[in-house]
Length: 249
Picture 1 (spheres, helix red, strand yellow):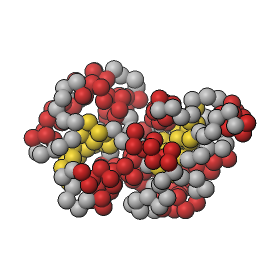
Picture 2 (cartoon, one colour):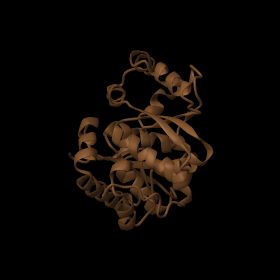
Picture 3 (cartoon, one colour):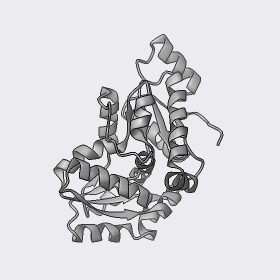
């Protein structure tokens, strides 16, 4: 796909402001599609940071196929995006996609990168230490498996009750209202089932799903965990060096 910059400001303006010292830092965002790339840029902007993003694929279906069938090609594509963002002056990279993070060879990407690379998986290692059973909603089963491996690496006694929701991702991409998505897909019933099986909290294991967070929280079934705040803090501090070695490459 042709790469288009998605930024809190125009790419040229961000680069010039970074070079002139008008802004001290800005971060690169890589995600599966233009929609969740924009969500990642917006997430950083809302937390006080300028950002510039590149999408890895055109659609969720294309991204899912690459994750399952071509993880090596996906890793190569992400490496090229990291290189482009680094050349633009980014101070760190946020991979704003759970399923992509579980499919690529993260150790290899971090070895090649000249700047810190943060993913949701880095947050889950710490999260697992504070929970025994988590309900997890993700985009696909590839992502659920990777999240489970990460939780187990952080705490062998932490288990997940998972549900893959690619149809929900597609509806978010189509800009359906959150209330309509939650009701149509019976998501409160899904969360209630997770609670009945011992789930202590609901982990939003897809970066599309904060789009529904307020609507889901309205029902007060389980506490909701959105990793975005912790991801931003880790990126700003530059604390992620090696990260979890859980890629597929």
